[in-house]
Image (cartoon, rainbow, N blue to C red; front, side, top):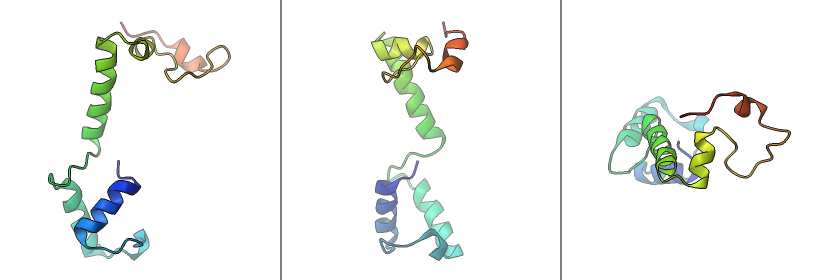
Length: 97
């Protein structure tokens, strides 16, 4: 969950320099970082919140019966990948009903 954009926001919120490397972080700064990630004012989604949002988005597509939702429901490739010779694992699983 924490990519480049969110890490820049975290560093700015904590007052750290932009080019700070992970090896340069002191032990007390790790505590600051974990508290900042849990801080609701920054609005960062990590771990279960991020998984729940993704799951809800996919379920919304399935409920609306969009093309992408039906592909998810049938456990086929969604983003236009080739299916004639690839995705054997996906096609071997039974579809969700």
